[in-house]
Image 1: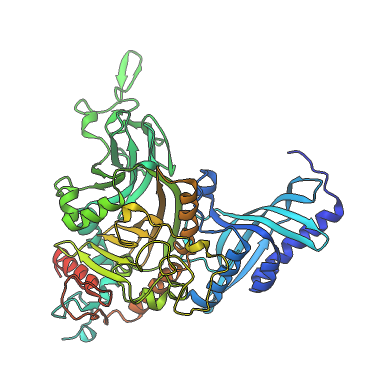
Image 2 (image 1 turned 90 degrees about the vertical axis):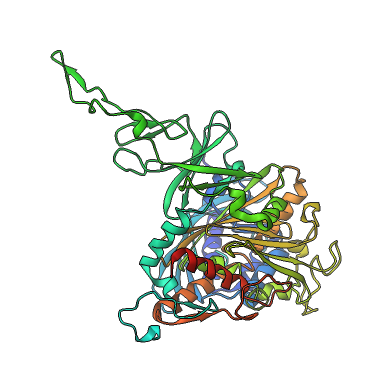
Length: 162
Length: 418
């Protein structure tokens, strides 16, 4: 695997960013979640089977910030579901490429545990983030985040972003 | 005597019609085993996939009918075969890949090899080994490979969709659907080649029949699916019809929004809550397609194994794969048509956000099925009620009826003998 020339400073920023993202979704802080995305952005949750076979279908396929906002409206106002908490464990990021214009392509593995009101934490979704991020003066923004999950079956439903 | 007083509880239908459905129909493991036998393995055609999933000779896809693993495969002569994924030798479920391309099937355990039709081609050491000039071991003299093929299923293809049956005496697929359902089937699968967009898969902890009932129940969409109503996709003034086959096992819920075309009623943002607008209206960027011939949504339930979905531009098959009485896997195969423009493909993919395990209007279906099953399990002597629109079974020109559920259970009782 080729090495990249990322600076220590940027790697620390990136690490902090991945952990912040996990904390934000675990706290269901959807305003902060939206703020982590660029205006022109893509967010998908896609089964590995589709991704590996180049099939475009995804469990969630949001291709604008407006769609992200509409999703948040859906999960907070319209979709009926069993209440649950999420807990994310996110690995250190792996840099795939870095351009001199501040665009980083990177990935990190994640595990999401789901805990329902009367329940015990269960392994809910396992996969990797495949990202295109931009380092700006205001911090890092997500231009594209694909959550490629290994689970053959989603455990009934997937409501919150992962 | 009511079920409540009968201990141990025996599965007896103690109501004169099907406007009451006993909970044991969803909780009794013996009933479930009988359903697999009587509904999935005998007398019925079950969904296995789309031809578009196996476009090339040798392409195969592993799937299930009821709880039996089967393989759908395209032969060199382009015909499609479906065989059971159980080796004739030691019973191993030999095919482990979800899909692939092969010239033949080989069970890794003892290298028994089958052609794509399921015929046994050869077995190692059939004639034993030669040692010191003598033949030792090997199969019996009367062993014939022709007696030991894989279980072969009857196959029906129509419009690019593949069904199969373990029962070689089953009626034709066309007779199984009946003329009314067949006309809606042909509307959606009118001979154009299908293109595969991909899968969504979810495991729902509820009895499989609840999914059939969910799509035979036009009572809930405007009530449970708040999203539908909020953004104007479900309106009380939609033109609607409920239709069934003559046995009441299959059904279609047909509805037409507004006047068709790109007015505010059929496209997007106008709604009961006029103030609610999507930030990105392209979720509901609907384009009327000529093949619709009117209806903007047709939801078909083909008993017992599949639901065929047309919701505006989003088309999919939803395959019901039971695992035990209290759980099933629900596999959505989204597709398009060969003459779709790239814009239409994008449109189908965007609208797919409404459906599947994360869908704006389908995620809640899986949830209510899970909690219904919880209610049945805690109170198995009780029953549910399906009386909207009366107690009779009839086609309607409105959505305010549970007639399709009553119809399904009239058929179910007949086949199950309860």
